[in-house]
Amino acid sequence: MKTMLPILLGTLMTAGCTAFGGDLIVRVSGSVPISGLTEKSEDQCELGMVSAETGEQSSTRDIHPDFSTTMMVVAGPKPKLYYFVAACGDGREFRSDKVAVSSRNSYSRNFYLGTLVEHVP
Image 1 (tube, rainbow, N blue to C red):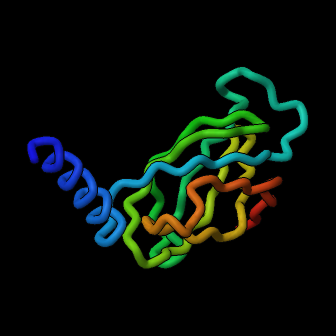
Image 2 (cartoon, rainbow, N blue to C red):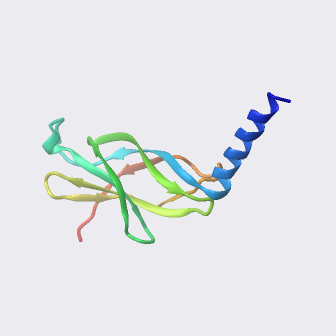
Image 3 (tube, one colour):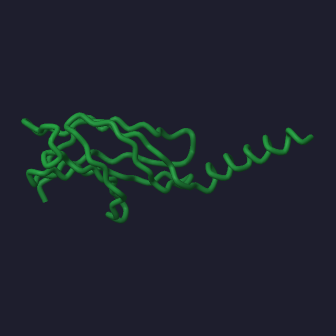
């Protein structure tokens, strides 16, 4: 009986995150088409995750031309659309297509964005 309690509590906590949501870590990978981009920090780009609904941007990560990084987002069971923006040191900005993020297990937590497309505002 004593061993069943921790198992039951763990199951309930996992089910609660799936049903109600919470912090979710996603892996994002792709590339930024910048020729001559080097490893120097001033030549890097900064990748941000943007809500397609509100335009609000989450925290950012420094990335290289070919990148694979993790980002954290608050996700609920209902899928929400996001896109990724890479702002680079040369002033150019690149965007991904939209992706759906949800806390449900049927949704991916690994997003391959391919080559980001230059965005001209």
